[in-house]
Length: 108
Length: 242
Image: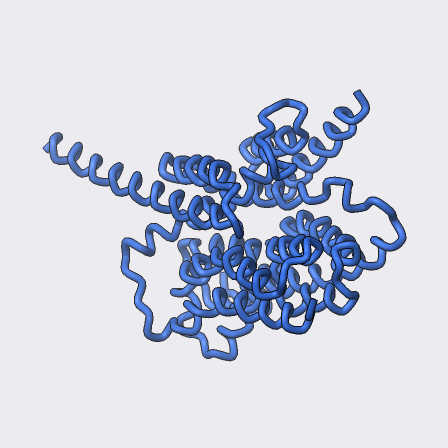
């Protein structure tokens, strides 16, 4: 494995997708409807990442069960986020429930 | 309230701190896995310092240990990071006026987390000057933290055995949930979340994580069209009252 080519190639493609719209910013006009559609980007992208991460934690099959600590932690994080609009609290509650339930599920 | 470049910078740092809590375990686990994954010490450091792309680094590492060739890994990185194209398009209006010496580093430091806080700050009603300093503050604290955690992981990984089995990867899910929840205030947003989740699950088996991009685009489209429909319904209702 040539690490130099690997890192160089990964840098180039990653920077390209991050920079392309910024670089063209002078000449690129975003139509109004597209601008409205883009407001859904954060939610759609992050949920498309999170849903498989919590429901397919091992990467093979869907685990819709209370013995899945990822699912329990995610549920707790959602509830905490709804209850108090506090990012730090949401993350901490989610991680705490994940680790505690994982410990309990392993033990019993 | 008047904002100065300095006050915006530190505000960006401060607003990003909660997200750092979720990024810390994620960065440490990357460093930990890098050796067993088959990267050299310098390769692991370069991944974080030069590529600087959390989930893509993990996927690439997994492919290195599975013996994939570098062109295949680079192609996969491209697909996994395509979502940044959506991010930078979303932020385009806000960086349009900046010179290239700002746009290039801001693009390099674009991440899920910095995008999330910047987009929220940019959408606040009152016009704010020096907004790029806010972005820079958020970006730099993310970058600094990621380098530090990678190094901690590399060194701890050799001392604490089995660190990669602690399930620290859940931190990323918790962080992303924390970002998403405040958005879920109306039907189009909730519909976008449900469609993106459902398709993300259904298409999980597609190669190179292509499913992620398809699911995200479908979610965006769902939210947008539902919003259009609700808006046109409202216009008809008003018309009937008249």
